[in-house]
Image (cartoon, one colour):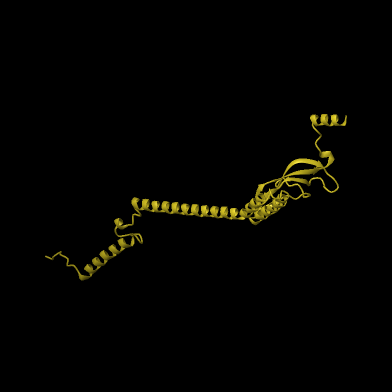
Length: 207
């Protein structure tokens, strides 16, 4: 009787080993590239405590920056006040000198006041302020304030400043400190008719 047992050949074992290796290799190939071997090893980011610490540091830095800017602005304002006072101290000195000699020579006070007036204008110019007091220029609503009008004449065309009642001033950058109060020359047909009371007063004067 012939035996039905089969003997394993060496080449069958080699094939099985190769199959097992290929199976493992195939499983390895299906894993996504760059995936960590252990999901728990992935970085979870900053903690709540760390975020709060960063926020507090940012708030502190902003507060220090604000305080530094406030100190700088205060120092600049102080320096400007000192510069302005220093520019007008000579004006005050000359006023006191004129008043001191007013009793001895009353006529000299007029000369002294004129000198102080000129010195005050120079001080304002030195601080960068431009005086607006020129007659005969075109009326500018941005620089002039009309207090009245007069008929235009040969030397004073319509729409120009006929007279300056109070000088205005503007900063060096063009910012208006105050407008000049002026009288404007207008064409006769544009002149406002006198009010009823003024007409009655003029009639009594001519009667």
